[in-house]
Figure 1 (cartoon, rainbow, N blue to C red):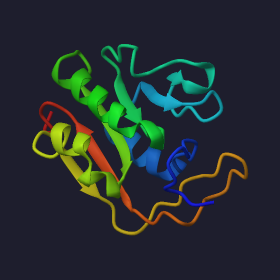
Figure 2 (tube, rainbow, N blue to C red):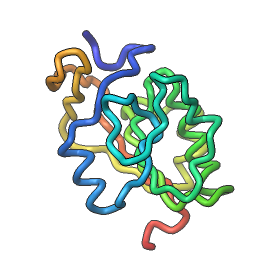
Figure 3 (spheres, rainbow, N blue to C red):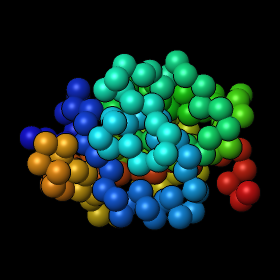
Figure 4 (tube, rainbow, N blue to C red):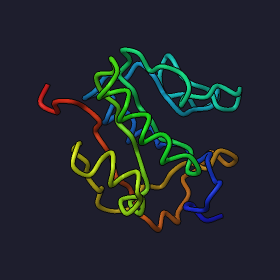
Length: 150
């Protein structure tokens, strides 16, 4: 199974990557999870029909590994929650090939800090619960925050 196939929305974030980010940001909400793979105490469970794009993220410190097929909508949502809402920070994991997308250019490129990880992250296959090789795009982490120093 290829990692970056449109509609393949269920690859999970490896614990080591989440834990490293969580030590810095102390997340309180996983904005794109299933009941089985929620990384935070609170989450928007898309497997139960909860639409994180429609719900307010409030004052949560948000972690988000968005469904591949909805990454543009999640990028726009994160931008609006931080810039126009009360959300202090959203950290989003994206495939590096989305840096060419319209949403990335409009909402991220000149507004927020982002980094492309060296090497390839092996995301977790939800069926086998094992790391999947085949991340042919690389991984970019975006830090949606009004002032990254605070």
